Image (tube, rainbow, N blue to C red; front, top):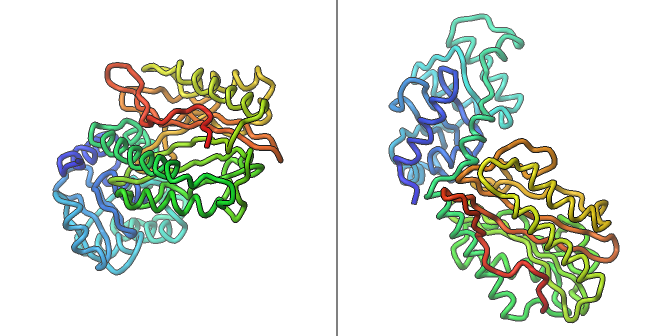
Length: 378
């Protein structure tokens, strides 16, 4: 379980790494990472000089929730949102900042204008639109770096999310849901339900169920297509526990598999193993992608593997490190990432095998999934 001290230390690490008088965070996943708050409206202020001046802004719907989820940090209740809330609370607290760190990817144009006006008034300067950008420092890279290395409490939550999702899939298989006649949307809805009754806060993303030709669409949205004998079925799914996501993909064959199905399934499995074999402290994420892609290229299926080999997983389902071509990001102890090569043959079918892995302190790499990654028959 993540404690108030854990959250405080995360804020302290960000405080030490950023050159700004204060930091204002707008992204909800990062706010949860630094405070534990899980509501839908929040802004986090981190003072550069002392943790005593840190505070969270949210609205009246979350008064009780914030007090429970965010021990050790002040909470301000404000009916305004975004930068409007910050400027309102900032004036009340007499805040000043000549330089402000922000998570720029979440700073929209209205927030920008509000911040420009507030910085101008708080510093008693006539700041032009161009000038205010010199006072705003995008700290997104610092946040991504901190979040990419998981601590023990995060890995525990990731384990629980993976176990929740896998138990749900196991029950789905045992119930014989993956049989001819069942539709993709029925399978997805049942799997989502089974994850939620096991404690998942929700789903990591819209559960992907693609059968037959739809299995060749990597991010197919489940529809009324029924499962048929001989189909390949790709299921990509994830649970959320304690704010942390799981991510797993398995491919099934309904009945006996054909030669071409076995061929691409074995090729994808070999690509997955090739990437896994590259994992060690200090390896670049791009080297994993290269290893997986080389296997598929050499088998002649390169044109049918059109996405990256993996990504980091945490309080966002997709985050650093990015396991893609040329990525220089190095894996270190605490890195959590997916390996998910695939082959997708249009109008025929596809195979994807995805596990989430953690690189441990001892240098070992451990899968968060226990279910066989080979082609599964139902």
